[in-house]
Length: 522
Image (cartoon, rainbow, N blue to C red; front, side):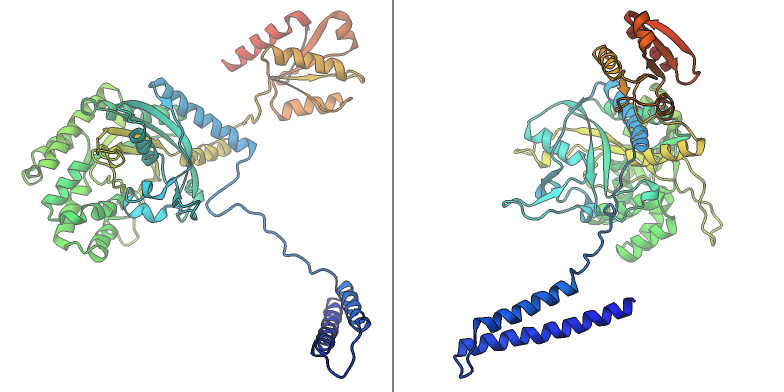
């Protein structure tokens, strides 16, 4: 059948081609005023034949649209959004507990604002087409826009949080919570303060959030850019290669030392002797005892930068001990964080995972399951935007909400935990017909009292349907009203979970519901 249709269409197309040529010939004769006369009737006849053939061919089917989200993005179902909002609440409550206020900035910035701030990651910035003479880019993070905001508004001190979407032209690994469009939750302290006090508070904030989310064991790795710079200096790394070597070291949490060493030598032209010296240090980790050990390292402390960084690290760990988070803090010499704007302390929180071992390797190297928070000190970033280069010291942390959400979602699926997607407290119901107006009046009373309530949008819904909806949506109570309840001046309050029914005087309904909802939330 399909083959016959195709041959028919082919014959129609050939006939169509013939008549098209006829029209061209007829029109040509008319225009060239040849000896063969042409009439309008002849042209009309050929056009009519073409229209008839077009009708027989029918409209060509339009290609079917493939419905999908763009690469590196996703939709969120009501259940997923409920989990997500729960994570957001824990984070925002923590930020507010530490005295932060919030701001917002545009989703896109001038391209020149973002250029040169991210080192090798600058290639991941999304550039937009020219818009009215301005070259724009989607924001890569919330830190650079914050620095621009502080400089533009001449702010000397601020403690702020900002939760918004950012964009990276990356190859996403969505199963690991990596996307091209994702939220960042940032907390930053800007201003001139005594050393390490704001830095230690940022680490405390990370600790509180991860502890409250109950994700399991985690560790907060800390290091100092001055220690790294001093390390590169004494290992013989040319100064113009500091940042590029730093970006290689930063990959140690995702791959193995021999791979990083190969990249530094083969791709970045570092001397193998220098690379081996770096390897002796960047595989060290510990706590205050490691700081003391390195302060006695005669080669390392020859660098003024390294010594200053180690003294700062000693103070930071001391404050972390006072805050009660020292047991989760690890001084890790491999932590580098590749962004160019960091100038001091850097930190990164990771969930502790299994050891990954190369099949041809005898030594075990710990590879983390992924960073869930990171940040550090960036004292020079605001000065890049200020008119006179005025510096405003800053330190902050960014919580990886997408990674946390992926973990929380997987955890709830494994535990078959019930997730409420609505916050409705009461479903106003009736088992009798012609009670719509009474249900509407009762629902209004509950709304006006601040109680979250719903009704069925059917005029005469079945009682079983209303029960089933309340159970499916996990609505804790039903307020059932009927002719007898109206006559007695009561409302039957049904507990969805226990199915226990209690007549409540209408005047006491609001206070009774509030009391029961309060008891359920404890």
